[in-house]
Length: 203
Image (cartoon, rainbow, N blue to C red; front, side, top):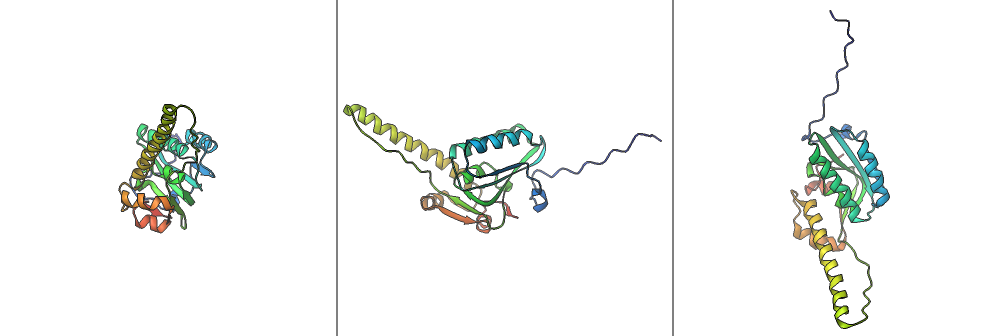
């Protein structure tokens, strides 16, 4: 008989497809709260770099909104690392408030990987612009200035709608409904979001 010490059995990994219960969210690997801005992005990247290379990685977020482009940056990091290592499952946990840019970030997670805590509100709205348009100078220059702002608006709308499409794809919510309700700030309570198929479950 060998005198080598018996190694302790490692826990079974969580399957990458099955629904999760509350125990799976006991120790989130990435914890984020506050405005979605470059400070949050720095915290996000630091925690992402320390996250396990395989298995479940819970990303917990609570936010009243912020910069949608920062939300897209974080989302692209999630997408890239998911593609890079399919053995790692990133799961979103929204807590208390997931407003505007928070919903943009959530859209980068597949619906089966989206969860909310009880009572959480998701708020979806259109992007906003606050830019004065001052026209001065030769007329041709004025036309170019107006066209530049118009192109910025058109491009921002296209990016916004891509995010809306990612958010509702696979749910019971149509794109037409999002476009109709987003200008008025559309709030969904956690159970309503689940009923609409926007998230997997409420814990």
